[in-house]
Length: 221
Length: 298
Image 1 (cartoon, chains in turn yellow, orange):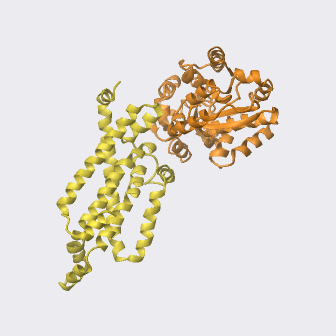
Image 2 (cartoon, rainbow over the protein chains, first blue to last red):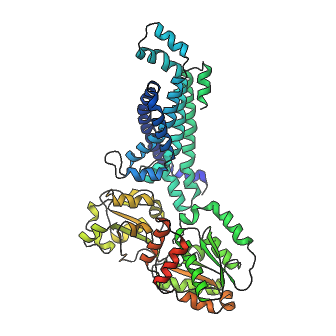
Image 3 (cartoon, rainbow over the protein chains, first blue to last red):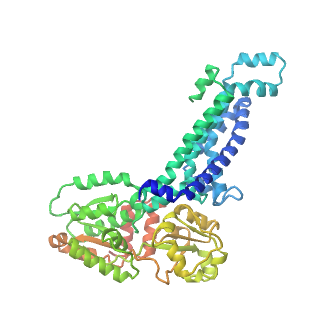
């Protein structure tokens, strides 16, 4: 059986696993952004917090996903087996790029600009919403974009904890020693990653046309 | 061991392993090449064969462990690049002889033994004692409370139970589908399908009530879990044996006695504990095997 025939034959499951995969990624990214963005903003205001939070986010990256799942199984509400554990783990992994880019973006805003905002009588809150966030939007979105692409790849591990997604094909294929089955998970996941990168790239250009050199240099971080 | 992902997981190592195995040239006559596949249990068994040979013959074992899979070990044996290695009857039957799985351990053993002799001039030694097949595992407390000994005993509880299985168990022809049918099992919900290592954890944390593992998994012993007997004899046997070149026995007649002494000496539980000592406690394999041999006066 050729790979193409296999894809045609399995298209309903491939489609439903792809949707499952997207849901896992969307849920995890929502959690990560809801936590990472405010936390990133807080890091700029409270620099003593910064070291600890970024160190913690770094450490999380080094925990192997299977070990993280193992830790989460006994945790009530968040853990167990199934989608919730997978989403918590994926959100934790997505946190670092979001946190770091949010912080870097905000910290990179020209002090002269902040000074003039203050001189114009803006409150810190107004300065944040009307000056700092718009100016650092490009860097922040670049972090979200990186995190999304990474999460689409990492989400294949969700199948190890019974959460479904495209990883199911990969695990099943390894168990059956079937390349066709592995590729039925790997190819759609790769396409999703490329598509997400393009879409978020468009969004980034819409919301934050490149302007300052500080933003451009921070993107590459 | 079932021909499994473990055989395949280290596909990359296969290249390195084969290069090493095949590059070795024929040693002087008192050297004997002991092989093993590339997972924990095979390393332990390879070390056991090597120490047994060291203790009871004048031969000098050359350890060629961690070879990338069944096929590679078999080819190395045929080519004279190995003299012996540990194998499993069910694997030999299906992966080497390409026959369908069968259920009777004695019949499988005889089929493999005869075919290996006539087709390959290889001798299959007496079974070492344990059987590494799928194992249906429950928590020790449940087994005691509900008096569970065999898979049939869980049939009345299955409608309230949640099951957790690995991908391999779900996909293999000797796995889930036939098993559930043979025992007429219907669980509370669809089985949770997940990674085997996490399954034991999920069982311990009561996220699931029954899982399918491998009968010699070290965690079974370490977590106080109980393996249920396969009373309807659904799972094919994967008895551990040694496979030895006939030419090697001809050259070294004293080898046979040393190896035959291992027959029936390793129980499922012995193997679990040795696997756990290496995998879970990270003890040195030489010491693990030395202790086992001392305890069994080998």
